[in-house]
Image (tube, rainbow, N blue to C red):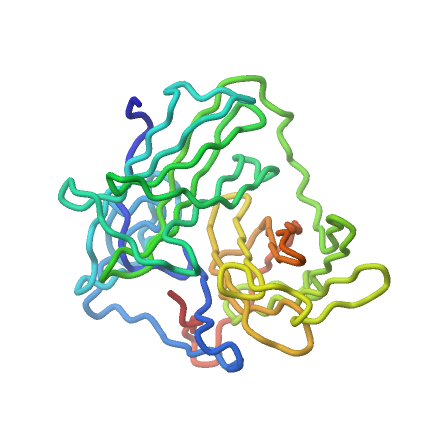
Amino acid sequence: MKKVINTLLGVTVCLVTLSACNNVENKKNKDMTTHEHTDKESVYACPMHPEVTGKHGDKCPKCGMDLKAVNTENAVAYEVQLTTSPQNVEAGKPTQLTLAVKQNEKNVALDISHEMKLHLMVVSEDLSWFRHIHPEEQTDGAYAITETFPNGGKYLLFSDFKPSGGEQTLNKQEIEVQGKSSPVNNDISTKYISKVDGYTVTLINGSDFKTNKTQHLEISIEKDGKKLIEKDLQQYLGASAHIVMIGKADKEFLHIHPVTDNRFPIFAQTHIENAGVYRMWVQFKIDGKVHTADFTVDVTKGKKDENGEQTHVHQH
């Protein structure tokens, strides 16, 4: 198998703009711990290009994102190597994806996080196609899985993992798939209702998404005229559901897990840094089958908290 694609350095400190995986160790506690980032003992790095560093207020020259504070005490650099077999990826043909998380050129052991050691979210550049898959550990410590891409074009691969003894980490890679490209999806119209496998899934507060606040995600599910409650859902990846949000313009990534709220079968909290259009995928499990509902929301800029600082939901 030939090595392709660029490698990116990951950092062990998951920033809120990268990974919004909510801690659900105590699902009955709806109150989310908050904390504030400070400049003390921090450097600033790009969330998507960690090798780019600078000072507060700088922007990444590669993607234009604001540099985020990273704690230097706990920061450890990891290298994520992605290889494909065959080397030239073609649409409609199976491709083996292999990811190796390395430190000092050695594969790093990963802990189980939300029932899996490695979560891999694959999306087309226009965010019209989404897959959440879990590569399997190989004898050499790498992780591999076979995937078939539907069309030619650029695809983004977000891998989420927790190195043993380290912090939850997100890494972003890109691959080019050869073959006929699908028409570019420039549809930015909002979508709050998704019908999938006979279920009507509604993002109830979809028109009220704002930055600079703890954002609620209130989701209802209905089938055959019956409104489902949380106990109608089976646990999926250690929670009642699984949620991913990705910004259409800058590809800001949020990985979210719900907490319990008896008003909704799926309820979560997160913090969105940047305004703009986001695509969202909500996955839930019933009768052994995972269903994926999709939404499109327009996040507007909200006011900062009264103290003038942004508070963030505590996340891993």
